[in-house]
Image (cartoon, rainbow, N blue to C red):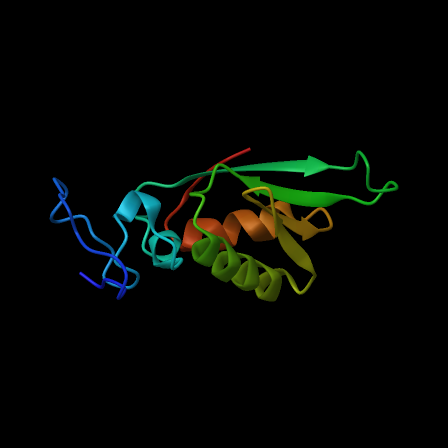
Length: 118
């Protein structure tokens, strides 16, 4: 356990759940490794939908229902943007791809082994 010079361990019941990076308990991890190491479930159900509201009439394809892991979402967003040849972003735990590209996104997600609804 990494301790700072002015701190000392008084008592701990969680001996196995200490972050190796910052020395804090894993539930209070300060170094960001906790978010990167979150588990991704084996069976992912992705939900597709189209949105126009609040986008000046522009259509976006939204992929929702994915695990809330920032690294996973960023990598998947990059793959979907490359597969569709368009722009997109990760917003509020969902991936937004510009345009009505449900079929291309569905094919890409099925190829990766996800279950797709919508």
